[in-house]
Image (cartoon, rainbow, N blue to C red; front, side, top):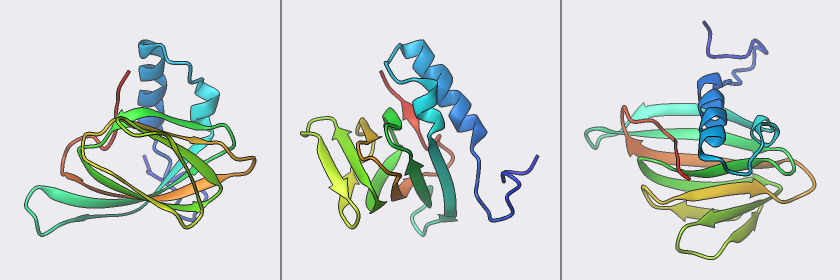
Length: 143
C-alpha cells in the first residue's frame, strides 16, 4: 500500500495516525469531534537521522481548516512551529494560551502536553519541525 493519496504530488495521508487519534478521542471522552480531526491534514516533507545517536528530524506541514483541532498530545522530543498562514491558537501546559499568525514561531519542549486549534475563518497551516527519539511514536494523545 502506498503512503500517498494518489494525487501524484507527494501529499502523505497518515491514515493510521488519523484512526489512532479518532479512537483515542472517543476513549478519553474529550469534546473533539471526528469532523474536527478530519479537517486536519499532515504532509511529511522530510525525515532524516541526525548525528546524535538515536535521534531524527522530521518536518511536517500541518494544515487545519477553520475550527479544526489537534487535541492534547506530546512528542518524544522538541518541536518548533512556524505558522505559515491563518490564525492558530496553541495551548501549552503551564503557559497561557497564545494565538499566532503567519510568520510567528513557537517552541514546545519534549514531552510537554499541548494542543492547537484553527481559530481563524480561513485555512491555517504550520511548519512543524521535530527533533525526536527515533523509533518512538511521533504523537501520543493525552487526556
